[in-house]
Image 1 (cartoon, rainbow, N blue to C red):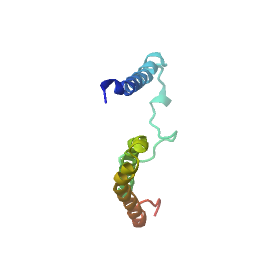
Image 2: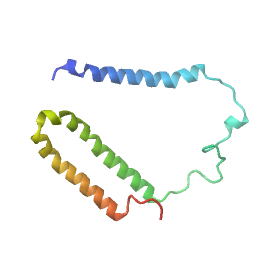
Image 3: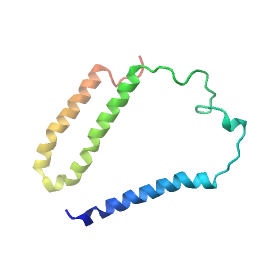
Image 4: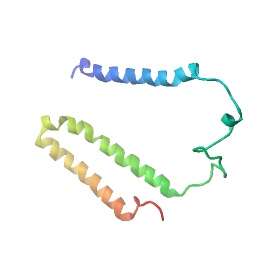
Length: 120
């Protein structure tokens, strides 16, 4: 591949960064600067907090978050594979089979262990 093949990706990254900067900077410049007692009051979803925000959470929340990240990252690896699937044909299917097998076995294992159940 030549460097020119990456030009659309570079343009998309630059446009994303510029848009992100505009979205963050423009409201700070043009937005209202008035303050009042209601704006300075802490809130959470419109409700005044009734306990300390630094309380301990059960480990299950962190486990579910880590599982989500692991499976999300593994699924992201499927996108480049799908882009070249037509060019590589059977080789792509054979190469991806162990990856998908590990992904499915891990998912079933977590499912059977009850890590994906909400509540009690």
